[in-house]
Image (tube, rainbow, N blue to C red; front, side, top):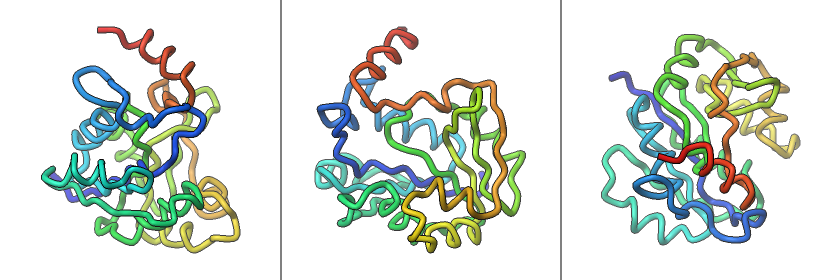
Length: 191
């Protein structure tokens, strides 16, 4: 297996959800368990960025092989701060970026993006809606996280070298932000 890092953010407050979504039940575990498991099908190391309720995540995943726990003490500043914290620990030439609330990504999605890697941020989209995981080379990643005036990672990526790719997999946009998102996803993925 090639050395490929994947930053997974799990630091937020889950304010739109109304409850902490990382530990919501999903299949045989939690939403975050599934997100980590899916990334590990293709990536050799997970950089899990924690913040809100970080102690619980550190306890849960402390003994997980090839998983680096990174605490973002500035998580209240938003997602961009978590990506900055995670980017400091990337060692691989390319890395994936995704979020802990996207439990349906699969190895095929990671592989399809990997085949299209280049000296840019590769941003997947489904029917024009941006999704995850983003695949990015180290120089482009560091250029993006140093553009703090943009305010968001998406703006930083779009301001730099990037390529958008349309994908047929709707899973890339299945993130869970609200109770309605969670119910809809459960209905679509009943076993």
